[in-house]
Image (cartoon, rainbow, N blue to C red):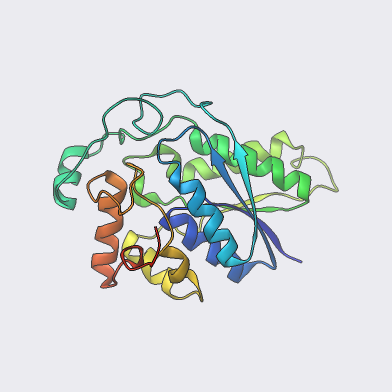
Length: 235
């Protein structure tokens, strides 16, 4: 039986990655992290989506464990943008202000802990290189390094009976437009997408002005698909 741990934040990319995992593995266990983020609504979204997908789900409680000036975990003001082009011009190649140092490294470490405990040798994450100018821990080079440190830490690099834990990032080379198209190819994914939460402001309906909201809207626009988050029947 092929088994995988999926890092399920509750956002657009993690939902797509969850349904990719369901299509590629026989057993899926999902984890979400409460790390004190202001947009905690995403954890409740992850619970709902895991239930819709019919997979196991666990919330790992890490409140206020990550210290940063990121608006996600501090009182720093969240940047707003009127358009996708304006956002790109303002951010350019600088690191996005919502970046939380070592967040993805921590999440992958926790996923590896659960993988080792549950005898699972695959971890699935929704990170993508599209965000690499803004989030340095969403790059393939980081995932390669993370996979190495995880397996070295567990002794999988030298024990004959050990199984190498593989990190999968099915969206790593996809644009947001391509991610929408991929989600459409999986049964149930777009229904679950309606209950995903991306807005960094933690609002529903989404604010439409934060970095994450603008990226999501542009992806659905280019894909020629209506975002189902606006047509769901409950908050």
